[in-house]
Amino acid sequence: MSTGREKLKLSYPFKNVKFLDVPESDVYDKASFKNRRMIREGISVRKNSLAYAARFDTLVAKLRVELELGDVIFTHNPWGEYGHPEHVQVFRAVHSLKAEFNLKIFVDGYVSDKTHGFMSKHYSLLSSQSFLGYPNNDLGQKIMEVYLRSNCWTWRKDYRWPSTEVFYKLADDNEVTFAMSNNSSYPPLNVLTRKFTHGPLKSFFTNGLWLLKSTVLKKFNVNF
Image (tube, rainbow, N blue to C red; front, side):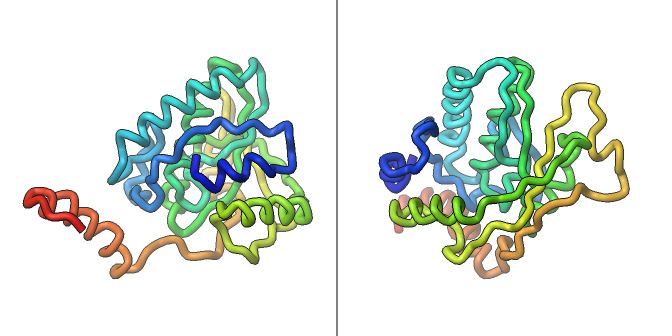
């Protein structure tokens, strides 16, 4: 958990919220969603993979203590909304406990240009059951301001929640999935308009320089 989120805990408006205090593994923008492959701990990452895997085990252990048989869970979707590897990991952790606790799991319907391909491979995890939610913008604004004061808001400051959000239930064994019931289209989703994919230049600096540092420069003991 980041320093800002440690501060957030002290001023969070709802006292019935429990923080699991799982440290971040610093993997944002260090995964390729193009390969569309999901692994045990989430998605393959180019850096901090050992920490990422360890966080998965920690998260599962902490959830196992908190969950009760038959709980209804709302969590991140299989493709991590806009493309955050730790969002995918949270989903994988919850999903790994589904059978053990007989969980009924619902996920949101956000997707971005970065995760569309990943979604196209894994939306088959969704059942054909869905419902619309109606966000409370005033409440959302109040929570956003708490995050801003704690210096841990990671989204646009002018963001307003949509009037409706769609949630999908994860399919149980032998349950009809959305893909089975409608194989000619994807489920209705909330598509984020912000661009999350990188152009060639930014991809070079985020991926190429990291590769250079971790291979060639490391070999000659050069640091920067």
